[in-house]
Structures are given as C-alpha cells and as structure tokens.
Length: 292
Image (tube, rainbow, N blue to C red; front, top):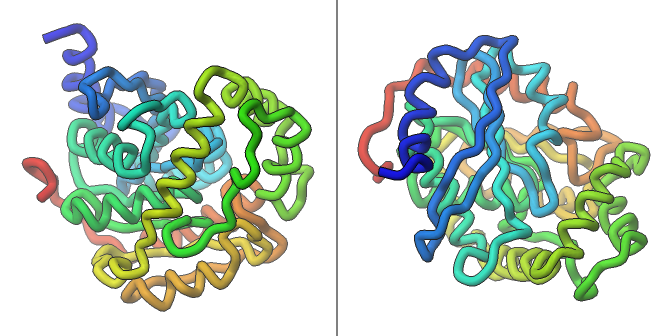
C-alpha cells in the first residue's frame, strides 16, 4: 500500500469522532480517476452533529461555504469537498466521472449516510449520487442546481478567457455584484488560462447540460430542501419550481434579492433554512459496503 493509499484509508477513521465545533481540520485526499490516476481533493471538516458534505459549482471553492458552515457547525458535522474540476481531462472530465469521484469519497471517508448540499454543478452531482447510491444519502439541499434547466455559463467562452470576460460572467451569478470577490476572479482567470482549463470548463458544462434528469427526479427518495435566489438568472425560479414539482415531499425556500450563489450572498438565510431542515432527521445508522 502506498503512502497516499494509507492516508486514504486512515484519515476518516478518527476525523469525525475527534473534531469539535470549534476545530477545523484541513486534508488533502487522494481519489482515483477513470484511468486509476490520482486526483487530489481538498477537504475541510468542522462541527458536530448531523453529517453534511458540501459540493461546489464549476468555479467554486470550499471557502465559498464558510459563511454557512460557521452558522450551522453547532448542529452539523460539516465537510466541504473541493475537487480540481478545471484540471480534469480525458474521461475524468464529465459529470459522470465527478459523480463517481464523489461517491468514492463518501464510501471511503464518511462513516454514515450524509446530507449532500450542492450549488449549481455541485447540486447536479448531489442529485446523481442520490439516484445512483441511495444508501449513501440521507438528504439533499440544492441551491441553484443544474439538472433540469440552466442558462450555460460558458456559451461563447474563448479558448483563453480574458479577465474582463470573467468579470462579466462571474458577475452574472450575483444579484448584488458587490459580493463578487476580486480574488475569486483572479483565481478563476489563472485556472482558465492554464493549459486545458477553459476546455475542462466547457466539457463539464456540456456534459451536465446533456445529463437532463427530468425523467429520473421523481425517484429521489431522500428528504430534499431547495434553497433558491429569486433573482437567479442561471437556474431561474422556474427551475426551482420544476424541482419542487418533481421531487416528492421537497421543500422550497426562497431568498429575495439573491442570485445563483445564495451561500455567498445570503449565508444567514441559507443557514437558517438548513437548521430548520435538520429537524426532519432522526439519528442515522452507519452504512456498509459499496452503497448499493
């Protein structure tokens, strides 16, 4: 067993038992892609209680969840998983592969079924996990999720996007553009200027658009909370209502004056909805095997 593989199996055995609401544990976790090559995920863990895993969008970061995590960590054991989406290539660069990487993480790192919280592309991945491995998922919280309808972020994307193009595109994610971080723009510009970065963004976006879940959404069995900005122009309110109509027993929580990234624009409201949603869950039992 390699050092990386040893770390993969050893990290989760103690993490959730030892961590407190005030601790934050940062990890780099090795996963395996389609070609059995290592793909390193960044993980941060904090909090106590109901286990929750947060999944980001195409240009998202673990840090984008911090405002929510800070407000719910007294009630939830919070794990943020950041995958290097814009560095994926070949057969790893699809929503199907990202789903499988997420399932791999849940099976190897989490000791019991979790609530998956996903924004945008991450919400789409959460839905796919819930459909493919129901035993791994206790609940879903979807914010601006793709899977039914989305206005593509990457239409007309140049091979090497300029910073100005990114400012405009990232700005569209917000109702109030003052929430757009210059550091995020710089980071996204660097990632998309790197070899293959823009190509990965386009490929992942296209694979998500081709993976329409309308015929399958009704099979979602996990309790589901939809948190949606009323001013989301990427996945508009009609998409939220579509999910609410198709997912049995789902709840829809609207946030006024908010766009596609409510965890950034309205973390207090997002957290309040999550805390209310937590009342739906009884204590979990550990999962075993491969999640079938």
